[in-house]
Image (cartoon, rainbow, N blue to C red; front, side, top):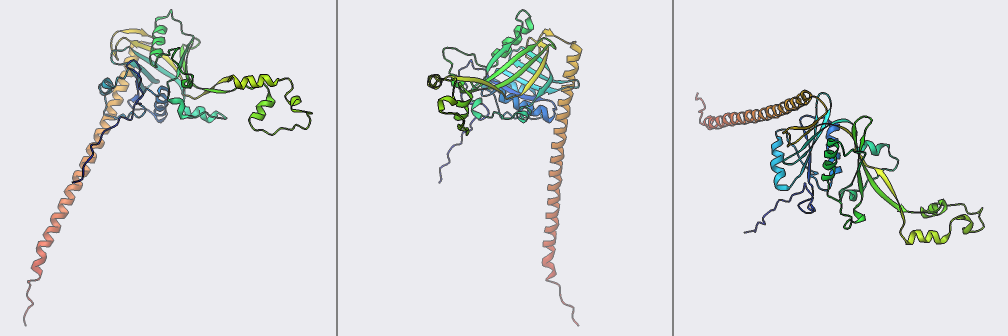
Length: 341
């Protein structure tokens, strides 16, 4: 008999290089009914949180929040990023799992990664940039304000801590900038790729290094062409490995406003609230209604499919019965006697 090799299920939605137990892991998913642009934003946020996130996480309309919590526990997931849509605005909730706190943000405006690439002359796209987490840069937060201190801790804990004496420069590929804008009381989140290029000391040398053709007929010598730049300086730049650092925006752009902070995981006393509690309750009710509507549509679709399958089965059974009846009658035709004269 042929031997059957036992199949092993491999976990493909979270990277295997998860570091130690202190490495933050995240789930990014949607709740309720959202449009196609917000669905793309969920995908972009997963790219932002790479590599320590479930990039291939699949949601179902029947999934409840507790289902994600149960799955997250054995995987060591520490943060949930939840995108939802309300009547007034879209929302982003960032929650620490499983004890909280939970931060409720209003999404004021956003741009997708594809929007950023569309307006760039030379878009930066390298898959290796997402093999390591981004560096987190926080700017303009007032630590004397309790909600700012909590937000600072939140964004810092979403990614692994940087150990200066152990960090490798080759792993520094991205930067996530979190900037507080006091003018409109919003938090701006941006993502950039870190680019390096050799530091060149003149336009002539830069043109030659890029393989561009130059007209040297007006110069008596190469030295005249690079006048003002010493050969020793150029050699020093390359031998010492001096490079200029640049930033290229990757997206997404996200402008959010803090609405509420709850002490627990979607529950507990309110540590900070910008708006009335009634508005938050209204948004929660809208989301619950959307979930009920989505579940009802899913249930109706399932029942309709089962009913159709049951009807097809009954019809096939009826056809088989009629076909069998014809078979039973057929042999009797041969025993008919020809009438005699």
